Image (cartoon, rainbow, N blue to C red; front, side):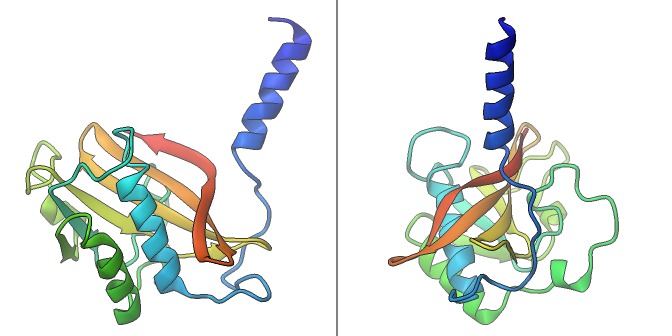
Length: 184
């Protein structure tokens, strides 16, 4: 490969990985910190588009949704330290209602407290055809909400990444993936 082509390819890869700019728990000026709407749109995108099976639609018979924030969402290495209280808080009633309203048309949902209790010894969900979904604590950069996501559908079926969710005239929309992606 020519040196110029190598440099161009590296530039594309670095750009595709997203920015590593500062984040905070404070939303951008002029936007609503509506975590319920942000989580709902992110989970719908995960289930119906980015479900690792290609194509649009929902491949799951049932969706097992963690009732609390998942501190390992967005990170397939499962952290590396004790999460702070904001990373493990229960989802609020408003967040749960928005998630239910968004996901129920796609498949039945069940709220679960511990993903490990819903996996068999060979790491499959205990309900055949189901997926375990989790969301992490939302952070904001100066332009968008960053939402860590997790989906577990077996020992060789899972994904962890962070969505970039932006506010448009139509409301919050997933505009892409920020940073690294892990798929098992």
